[in-house]
Image (tube, rainbow, N blue to C red):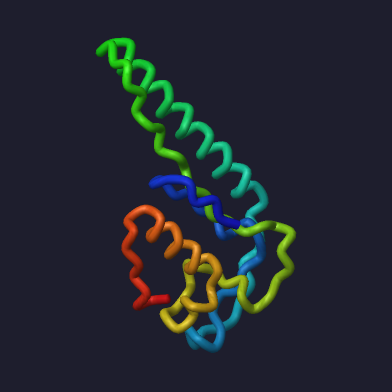
Length: 126
């Protein structure tokens, strides 16, 4: 799941079971178990970041007397649905090797995030 909204990115791929190692990395294949509250934590953190930004903007406006409202940087979120069934494509992004980039939904979402922020695509590693 990805919500690409702004320049701050919070991610938690460990919200479901993930595959590590195996053929591509020539290491023993392992399964990383789901971390139960990680997606809830990043959603709450995203909310708090946006609240803090709004408070800072309000404080600046009251001290400087600005009438123009600066834009709050939205927070982008990237995580997997915990209900997703485990399959060979639920790869742990911390253990990817270059040949797995194209098979990783997480890695592809990172590229979408980068493109949305800079307008420049780096397709070399896709």
